[in-house]
Image 1 (cartoon, rainbow, N blue to C red):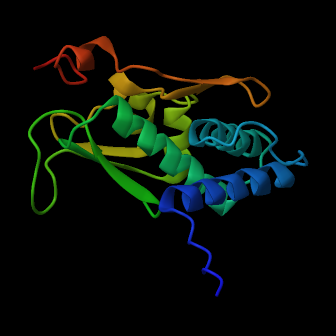
Image 2: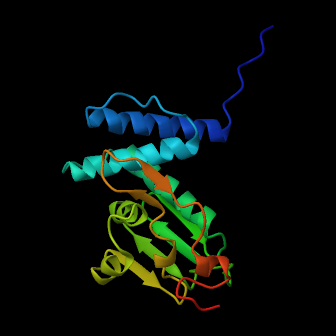
Length: 184
């Protein structure tokens, strides 16, 4: 009797979804499918690049690609600023807790950042600054630790055709045990 095929692991399924989102967005841009590395970081960077290329071209990003880019960039933020003091929400796609400090256990956290998916991608990729986005009402930040400017940009994408680079470490203030504004 043949053994049933094992279901792919959650990580493998997530990578497959990310790959499909990258290929769909590249196809919408008239680009061939992705032939680069299939690791999560490479696919995530390419997804962000393709989403930005669509936005630069005046077209909306494909929903699955935008979701994948948002989720990838929130994961990068959580990796650079581990902790549970700030909740970053990008509805309807995802939310993460990050930044060291007092954590909440129930109800609405005292430090919340909320923005739309396009603004999050622009902030995380260095296309717009934190202060202008907050001033324009594109980001709602409440609480003493809700300023993410010290961790942004997460991924620098200078133009649709350029390569991209992830930040490899948190800013000095975060490494030194201080919050984004330099207070302990």
